[in-house]
Image (tube, rainbow, N blue to C red; front, side):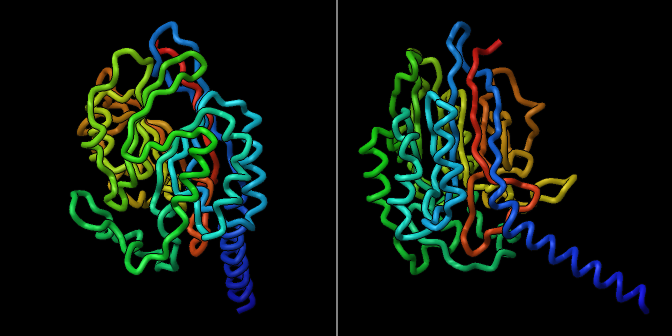
Length: 319
């Protein structure tokens, strides 16, 4: 019996340690990921693009705020923010203070559901029921907009655009980034069914080095539409990298219709790719980068085997 009790005690200690790690340590163990993306025309100078997403910021999160503020030391050429910045009504001033030096860099952003509505306590097991994920159109994909608590979206958008960042909410824009002409096309959050890609659809411009598609949630219909229009790179967030990964297996869910093999990081996408692996990409397939995000819903602050963070993409000429 002594052995049984020792085994039970060891198991309980391991479980408590695992919960503590996933709820306190890893959510604060931020990672800067670096990837190289060969998507520019030959002869074009490389560009450094900082991808940030899913801060879900609460003003008291000093460790996260300090880490994000220090990203300006990377001296990126362009910053792309793929949404879900807020998790509290009072978060906008804290966010603008956190971004302060990054806002001196050319930037663009789209909005996510938690830029519109405050997070709420929900059963985390619901993420394993894909009935809340809308693959078609015409239904709300989840219940975040049932009796929603509105966040100060206008203050967020106004604060970012006042410093020069471009609002890509169902919009197209052009930027001169270190002498390289870049076109950006963005949509409002597909997870809320707010996207209206038809209003900005059209072939990639011939007189730019690269067209970048920007969306919060990487739903297949948006990825297909953007790559059909020859976007060479699509950037998204929303998935939190699965948030809880199984060592040796990977993510269990993506919270959208994206396959788990593309839940975070760099992969390839082409119209109709579905769950086909990137190794089957046809010539000229676009690049897709999905951020693992910097935070999470304050009611489900867990991370396991999926560190939060940001990514510095170095765009280089195609071979």
